[in-house]
Amino acid sequence: MPGVEHRIAREASSRNGSIPTNLRAVSRDFVPSKKLTNVEPGRVVHSIIPLSVLEMMRRQDIPAVDELDEYHVELKSRRLGMSHTVAREIDRYRQLARRDQRVTRAEAIALLQLAGRRRDAALLFAEAGRVAADLAAQQVSAVARGTWHSLPRIGRLRMGRVLAKRLLKGIFDVEFVELGSDMVVSTRDSVLIEATPQGSACALVGSATATLLRAFMDFEGAVQHEKCQALGESECQWRTSSPEGNDG
Picture 1 (tube, rainbow, N blue to C red):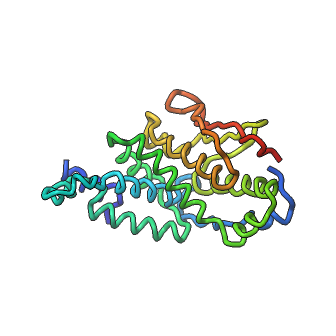
Picture 2: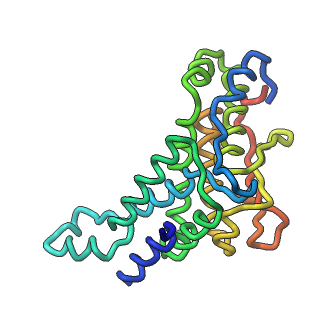
């Protein structure tokens, strides 16, 4: 059976912090770590990544209201994001994401490459990062989320730091560390760079990081892509200063 990259490409071509021990226990296993079996470690990608990219591809291809005239059928047929193939793949990835499952790295790379060839690729990846972060946040268990909400602000920030760190590692396969007042996210083996050597897909991690920090740490700043393997650096790195008063 042909993979997602073949199905979509065929259709496209045819159309031209430290926290108390009890909080650690609550947050430690807030999301399962299911992976494909019989696949070499590091060669899988969480299904949330391709799902978010396809979701944004569809959203950006929906015509504006003033475009919905008598030619809307022809217009729809020319927009890949509105195709039946993309709709089917979105449904498939949604099912995988609900089960916290992953896809092969090769499948994810092929889809990211397809998105990277679009003229709106930079915007698509940035928006996909926000969608992916929202989906990732839904992986937090009700128990962990309830505990987090019930804590005083300092405790909430500390636990939120742990939750954000685990989501960034578990969903996006990047490392989160604090260096002084800075928060740094990095990776040396980015599927995004492998798929888009020019670095356009890196915007997905940057926007996802900012979204997760805002969700769990009351973050109000910006995340900068300080180092990029596309520019010859040894790793991709995103850095931001901790929000004022969020020490702990």
